Length: 114
Image 1: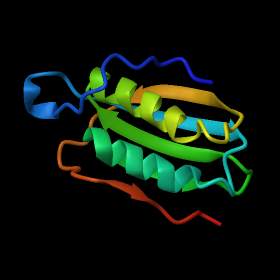
Image 2 (image 1 turned 90 degrees about the horizontal axis):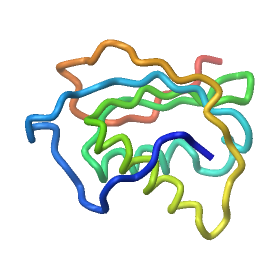
Image 3 (image 1 turned 45 degrees about the vertical axis):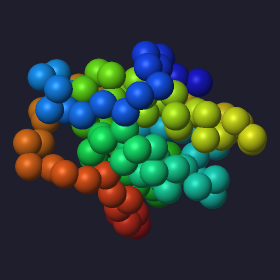
Image 4 (image 1 turned 180 degrees about the horizontal axis):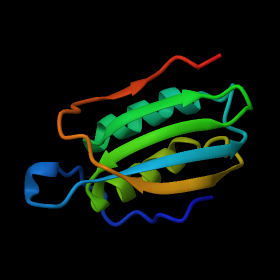
């Protein structure tokens, strides 16, 4: 389902001396009307990652996810486990490293552009 693997079952903090990175992601497939954004927010907050997620008018979901490599890996592991009871079919259509936002402190669900 994705190309990022989970490394550890523990929550980590960005203040552990690890470098932050920020990813811009686009998800396609079964990503709307399945609680995708709310699950993304819950799992990002659980690992201490920041960023945002929103539905797009073309049926995709856009996300910016910021954290350490460990937090990002943990996020994807926990996100996929959250759907273990009813797996959803999605792919990451686009993934790009972008500049880190130093003053961001939460992960939010944004309103759609449309």
